[in-house]
Image (cartoon, rainbow, N blue to C red; front, side, top):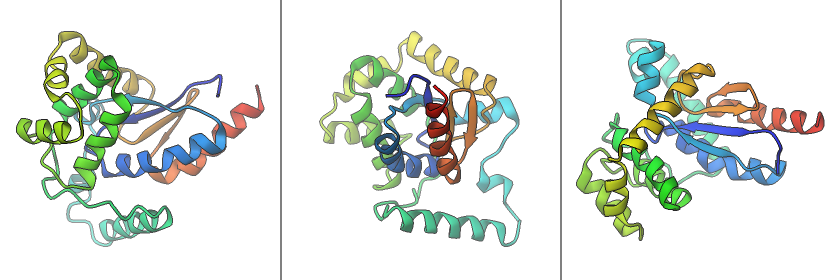
Length: 206
C-alpha cells in the first residue's frame, strides 16, 4: 500500500460522490493503495466557500445542465453502474447520515455503513433525512441502527465531522467528491483518471 495519504472527501448527498465510490475500488486494486474515506458536510463546505449546488448554480442556463447530464450518462455506461437512480427527494439534508458515518467508524462498521447509505440514496431513492427511513434502511442491512443513531448524537462525533469539514476547506476543497493525493487536490468524478495518474506518479518518486 502507499506511503502517502490518498483521501476521498465525501458527502452522501452528492450523486457524483456515489458514482466515484463505485469506481474507487478499481483504482485501489490497480494502484495498490488504500483510499481513506473522509466524511465531510457538503452544506458546511458550501457555507465556507460561498459555493452552491449545480441545481442552483445552473438554474436558467441553457444547454449546460443537459450536457452535464449527458456526461453523467457516459460515466454510468462506461463503468456499468446501471443500479444508479436519481433520488426523487433530492436535495436531502445529510447532517444525520454524515454524523452517522463518523459514528460508524467508531463502531467498526464504516465500510458496510457507507455501502448501505450510498445505495439507499442513489439506488433505492430513499428519503435519507427522515430518521425513520434511515433506521429502517440500516436495520434491513443488518446494522445496529439504534447504536449508530445514538452514537451520531455524541458531542465528539459532531465535533469530528465539523473538524473534517474545516480541514477539507483548509486544504482547498469546495465540494464533493474531492480527492487528495498527498497534497494534490482534485474535484469531481471526471478527475478520477488524474487521481490515478497522480497516485502512480507519486509512487514512482518514492
